[in-house]
Each structure stands twice: as structure tokens, then as C-alpha cells.
Image 1: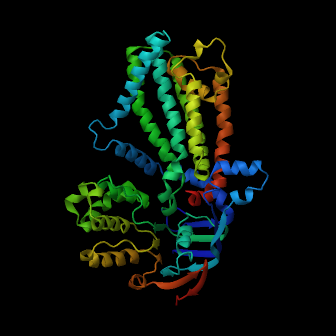
Image 2: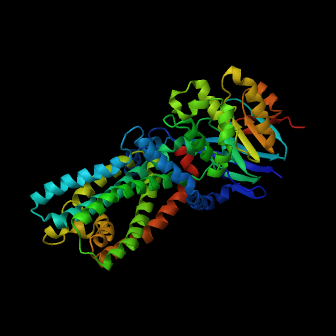
Length: 277
Length: 237
């Protein structure tokens, strides 16, 4: 079923193996990293073709946004820049990664239409491409984080190493959410709009440019806000704190529930995606 | 030995009207207990291939013919693993290379050389394989310095030359071609025929879907006719 197969091997395509093929597709798609990585890099290159600064614009845009928001909100909330700016920078950078992966995940298969219908390669490649593209953008944005903590050093400690497992959990959750909305959006074309609006609302109820500590009681929309907890898993360590136990618990539970859900959905939808796109 | 064995292959799919694509209609149809459901689910099931069985042996050159909608492209797409069967089995021995869309992977903003890589990857080549073939591809296109320019500056003829040169650089065991390989301008015609014949001769099995009988004859293909998703005639000897 793939364009590259050693001669001598037999490929069986049959009606009752379609679901097994779907799982294989997710795996072999992952193994075609050279392909999706090149396409992700090409997407970025294309976006900034003929601009003098190129992808530095990604870093610059983030820097200007963090700088401006930091200035305005530290005045507005009468907060100390030393603490507020690193908090804001990390929040915006990771929120950006989260929202763009999910909202671009919605159209991952739709924009890959001509490939999906004409090129024999794993369909999941299109999903990995979106993911890789957003990781590249995130890496550019992280430069701002580094600059901010040089200027306003947080409390450096070993707790920062918790960023690694936290980020892994963050990415795993992002991956299944992106895949789920990607599949649903291909079938129901209203989903991308719904998702965009939901993310917008979540942006305002999630402590990103305001701090959860300014609310007297932790209100329900923070306590039960899964996005808040995902954000905490990466934000706290990068600021030198330990993420709350509750955030780990929620992050792990979501991953354990969401990953099988995404795979189940993919197996169900796999054969129909080429007709839906 | 390359071999394809198709047994009782059926491919059906639903074609949705714009109605069923909308979530609102789906939700409404749930809420109103089926009255709207009958027109919300205005999906029509199309049986594109109906119980097709076919053995394709090493060395076969096959031209699939038939009216539009007879199932030629569906058969190629199913062999390429793009469409999944709803019934039956296909066993394929050998690597499959498919030229279903002469332009997929090409990016008008990117340069000719970049496009050689992009389309090369899409066709299943690795970076090192393309590295080793890029000079030969470039030479064949006769585009010279133009290869450093964005493809959008090319004339239609130059564009198809480039696409053709890349497409014919792959070397699969089993070659699937939909509607020709995209030839290019007339002055280029002889080169194209020679290269196509050499390209096709390297494949152990080649299957073409085309209305162009002259092209099929040039390729030495035996015809198999499809009608309404069934094989109606097999002229292989």
C-alpha cells in the first residue's frame, strides 16, 4: 500500500484488514519523518519566501507581542515585571503552540486533499506535517523565553527539569486532540469553526495574560479547565516551580483516555478519509 | 517476481450532498426523530468496482479502458492503497509506484530544483536517491538556468517537461499511470516517447488508465475494458 516496498514482500489489501491498516498507517506515517519534516520546513520557508528576515519574523512577532502585552498588563494589574514577563512569555508561547496545532489540525487532511487522493503514502503524514510545522514555530518562539529569563531571571532550580516530562505530556495531549479534530473536521465542515470559537473562549478563561493567583478562590473554570492544567505542566517548571499534582493527574488521565479515542476514531474513519476530503 | 492478484474486489463509497456534511443537519436529524433524517442523510452509495477478479502477471502491460466513471481510476487508486476495498482482497508482490496526478507535490512558488526534491519525495524517493538523480533529471528537462527560478515563471510546456522528467525518474516494480504521463511541447516529443518507453520497460508490471488508444499501443499494452465497475473484456493473450 506504500510507494516504497522491497520487492519480494507481499502487500495484502483486503476489506477485513482495513482497521489494522489504519493502525499501520499511523505507525508507517511516523516512520516517514524525512518526508513530513521536509514538508513542514518547506511550509515555513514558503511563508517567508522573499522576505529579508525570513523566519526571524516568527521570533520577532512573538517578542513584540510579549513586550507590548507585558507592558500594558503589568501596568493594568499593577504587577511586577520581573515576575510577570516570564510568566506571560511562557504562557503565550505555549498557548500559541496549543491553539495553532489544534486549529491547523482541523484542516490537516482537508488541505492535503490532492495528496490523499492521488499519492500512495500514509495519510497520517499530513497530520505529522502540521505537528512538525508547529514545533518549528514554537522553537523560534522559545528564543523569546530565553531572552526574557536572561533579563528577568526566575528562581533557577532543579524543578526546571520537570519541564521535560511535562512537555512530553503536553505534546501527547496535543497530538490526540489534533488528530481527533482533524478527522471530525474532514467529515463535518462546521467543526473547524466550532473549534476556533471554543479556543477563543478558552483563551479568555485560562490564566495566560492574567495570573490564577489574582482570583481569591480558584474558580471552577480554572479548576476544571483542562487547558489550564496542560499549560501548568510546562509553565511552572520553566518558571522554576513544581506543577500542581492535580495538573499531572489531569494531564495523564487525558492522555490515557484521549489517545485510545483518537486511534479508535482513526481506525473507523481511515477508509473514508479519501472520499471525505 | 511482481504479481497482483485481485479477488472479488468491491469498492463502494458514499457521496454526500452538501447537506449531510453540516453538523447542524446531523444534529437536527437526531432531534426531530428521523423525519428530517431521510433528507439529511442524502448520501448516495456508489459502487465503483463490483466484484472484480483479475490476475496480473510479471511482464504484463495493461491498458484499462472504458467510459468515464467505469472504474478505471478507482481500480488504480485501490491498487495504490488509496481507496480501501469494501469487499474482497488484493495481494500485491512488488513495490508500487503511482502517477495519478502529474502535478502533485509541485509548488509554483518553489524553484525547479526544489520541485525535483518535493515531487521526488512525494513519489517515494529518498533524499539520497534524488541526490543521485537530480543531475540526470535536470539535463533531461533542458531547462538549464531556469531550474533556479520559481516554477510559476515557467511556460506550461516547461512545467510539464519538469513534471515529466521527475515522474519518470522512479523505478517501481509495479507502475500505475492515470491518463498518460504529461508529455510537454512538440519539439520535445521524441525524447518523451523514448524516455517513456524506457521508463515503462523497467517496470515489471505497468497498468495504464487511458482513453488514448495510440498511447496505449505505443506502450504495448493489452486492453482490459471496464463498464459500471465490472470487467467486460480482457484482451490479454
